[in-house]
Image 1 (cartoon, rainbow, N blue to C red):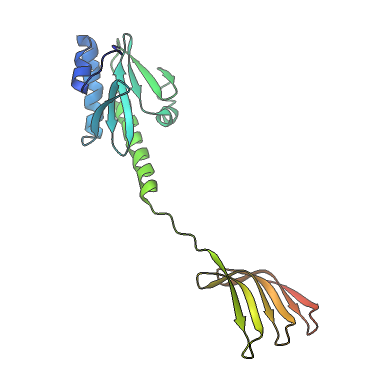
Image 2: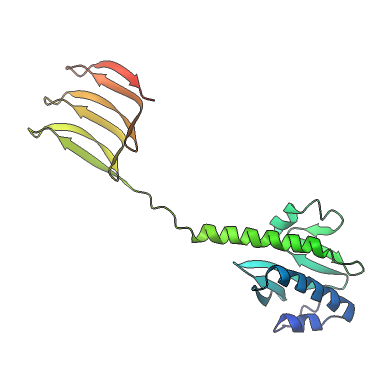
Length: 200
């Protein structure tokens, strides 16, 4: 592959190779374009590259083979189908003296399209804003503390304590989004543990 030359586009890249290699490069390019007709074509890292929802894949020519670069995930996904070819991380080599496996290339491009779309959707999906906990106190009519704990939004969440008017603790336990959870402790009038109830 003439690595020292900067190619302005894929046409000029392909034209730099011998006729037999050009034929295979054109085949692989046409096969990719049938799957992603609206993808952007560029020369990146000195080789033809297709962009759709990011960097989709590359291909290129060498003296002995056609290089196809569908990313490591595709090589792993099609490991069984690629057993007769030389592969490495993210790369498969198609010999110049054998027909290109166009059906397999199509399936690998389809895999990359699906993978890239899923990745783009995850990026586009806004993350739910996590509501912060805030301390909250409720009072009896006479101004003494009746209950205190934490709130998330408008729901009780976390540890809460409830008190009698004389200030002695009456009950304590945890809430999970407004619902009582775990063990709740009830105290007698002197503040000693009276019973422990396990909530469902």
